[in-house]
Image (tube, rainbow, N blue to C red; front, top):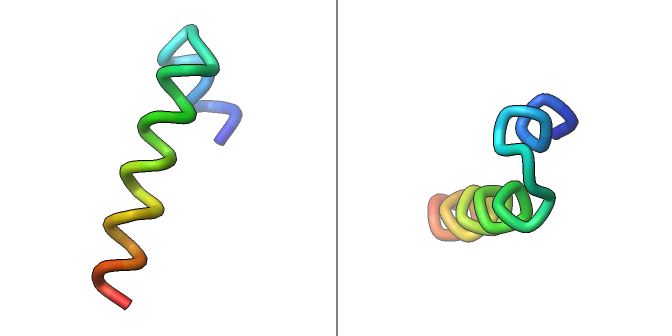
Length: 29
């Protein structure tokens, strides 16, 4: 998670990316 935030440079963008991943995982499950 920390790496994602550092790569994005913005916690907001990282949160959006994590949100997308979470929604994708929930759909797969």
